[in-house]
Length: 124
Image 1 (cartoon, one colour):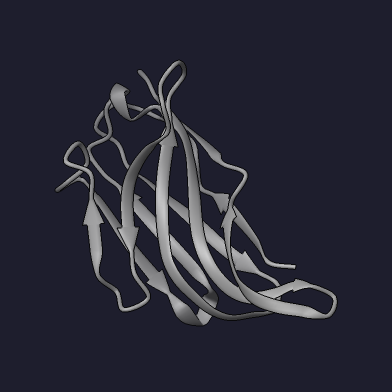
Image 2 (cartoon, rainbow, N blue to C red):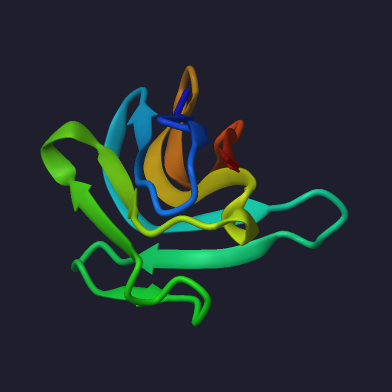
């Protein structure tokens, strides 16, 4: 079955950078859009960035100019480069994607998937 796995989170000082990865595994025919969300303690989940299968991107106002989303279709991986990080960026970051691939042993199709999340902490 298709799985999304995030990685690259960690502790970083204010002003620092991190690059998150979201890798899709399993039998995959096509990855459509991929969204990056984040959720800080006590807050609602927030859409941070989107990249379509055509490579078009969109960002939340709070991260424009600091975050860059990109994709490597050959590796079934989407990246979120985060620069000039500040304390307000502290959150669990999740990727979400529509993927056409194996759903079960005998079934394939397009479904929406979430990763398990990766923690980003910005602190001195």
